Amino acid sequence: MVRIGIAALLGGILLQAWGFASWMALGWHDASYHDLGSAETEDALVALIQEADLKDAGWYYWPAMPDDLGDQEAMQAYNQRHASMPTGHLVVAPAGQQPMPPTMWAIGGATNVGIAFLASLLVAMAHMKGFFKRWVFVVGIGVVVVLACDVASWNWMRFPTDHSITMAVDRLIGMVLAGLVIAAIVYPKKSSKHPEPKD
Image (cartoon, rainbow, N blue to C red; front, side, top):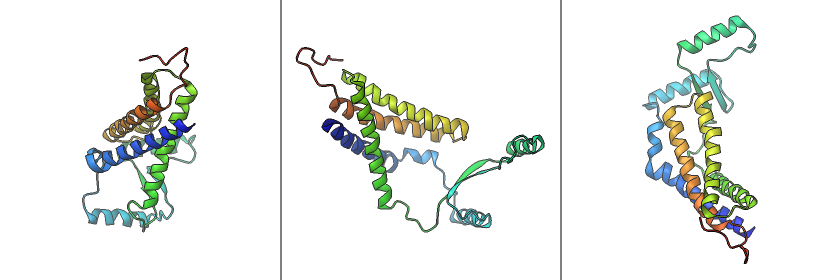
C-alpha cells in the first residue's frame, strides 16, 4: 500500500505539472478556444444573459427541445429551428469570481492525485508482471476516459473537433507520463523462485 501511495503522489504531481505545461506554458489549447473579440461584445452577451434572467449557475442550451417529445408538430418546428440557426451551449457562473482562485488549484491537484491513486490501485489489483504491460494498462485507462468524455461530447454535444482532439491528446499525454511512474513503482512482489520477467 505504501508503493501505491507513493505512485499516487508522484503520478498526481506529474499530471499537475503536465496540466500546467500544457495550458500555461505550451499554449497549444489557445487554437481551440476563442474569445468574443471585444469587451463590447462580452458586455452585449452579459446583457442578453441578464435579460434572459439566467440567475442560476448552470449549463444552458438552445434551441430548446419541446417538453413533449411525442408532439409531432412541436418536434417538427424544433427540427426546423435547429437546422436553420446557430446552436450552442452556454455555461453560466455567478459573477464576482476570481479567474483561478487557490481552491481551484487545490481541487485540481487533489483530483490528479485521485486519478493516479485509482490507476495505481487498479494496477496493483491486476497483479501484472512486466513494466510495459502495466504502463499500457494505465494508458488504456486514459483511452477509456477520452472515449467516454471527449469523443462522446464531440458526437452527442457537438463539441468542436479541434477542441476535442486537443483535449484527447492532452489527457493521453498526461496518462502516458503518469503511467511511467505508476508502472515503475507498483508491481507484484517478486518471488525468489519466479523473478519478474523482463518485457
